[in-house]
Length: 574
Image 1 (cartoon, rainbow, N blue to C red):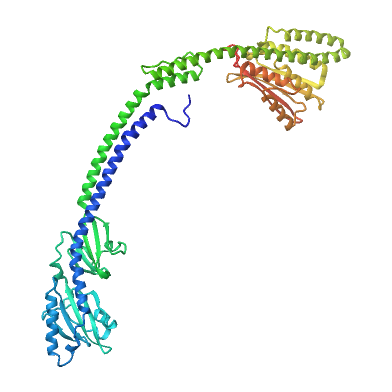
Image 2 (image 1 turned 45 degrees about the horizontal axis):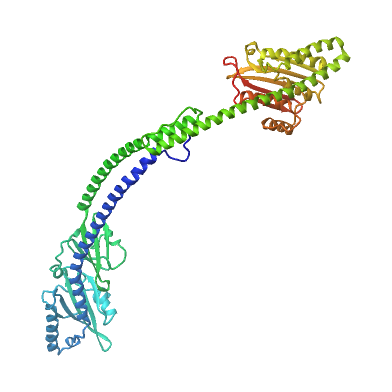
């Protein structure tokens, strides 16, 4: 029983066992790992976000408060006038009280329109105006000058005596359409660090990724910029992402002026997860191995009866109808066995009946073929005798004796299969008759070694082939030679009848070959077809007749039959 595009029952049982036992376990393990990773990521997100919020709030509030104060209408212009001593005192007191009221104090500085310091909030302030300010107009003061009245907030180290970065918040003061001075607040990192009590590493940058303050110098380059791997995040106000062995949460102050980064090292936790993953994988491998073993054992036990049924079916398929199915202690399999055994009994009975009918049909068809052969042979021979009586009575008498011997041989229905050595004797008589008729126009030779004389063949199976060769070979030729040979090769007997007669055109040859393959002969050409049919009825379709021919050169017919020298006559396969 062939297995085409299917699976064995045992394999299907094993797969089902694995599918419903192993797959859920794997899915559960994967789900646990995924949930664990998700919870770990969520925990990192919450932790970094919480710490980030703690840092962002004071920075955002400080920047917002000082920007708001800068926007107020403070009478700075009064400080510039020579008689503004009272105004200096009032402005200083107002600004100083505001700064001291803040959680994160800042230094303030008032400058005139020429960038000269008019008022400082602290005598120790590090604020200074660089020498190039008035000439070039760069920096925060330059932007305040280019945008009169607008509050400018940025990170800069240009106005710090020590070259440290500070948050610069300020604006230019305009009176009567011209800039009369500048109010500048500076917030240093030292003041902010007092309120940056984070449990995680952090960094504060401006919108250009310039680091203002950080808990670890590792986070910025030598040029004061944040490391590139932290700058590759999408350009959104808040985001959480991983880089290397760190989880990073970033948020921005109002107006995207500054960004706060909080970092959490994930290497240790990640290594722990890797270890847990390896241990889980090892456990899964053990479980998988155990499940495969259990699945194999389960499938073998459950499919044993099915395999017995399949084995019996295979033997039945190969023709052993004596096999019978045996059930086990299950009702269903016993019912299958009883039904199959009953079916086999009926099949055997039908086969026996069909074999008897086939044998009778086979014998009847062989008798019919022989009956078609004998008149045809007799007619051809009498035609030859008719000519000989007129030409040479003595030879005609000899021919009649040969003919009578042929007739007794051909009508002996008790003999259907003969040794080729005996059959060659009568074929020589037939060829001699043809030689007497056609004289020099017909030559023949026989090359059958005595080693094959014992091979048994259907009686006179070569005669129709020889008759056809002479009849059609001399139609358009003055002479013809006929050669008969026989050899045993590879367990087969090959008889070759080759002539040098007229031959056949390709169309005619194709038609003859098609006739030889047909089941029924509906034509008047019965000679070669009868030979083919007799051989295949006796020995099967592996044997028979093959024909090759070339127009104007001749025809070759090869008959193949079993070599019966060792095993006797093969049984009819029909």
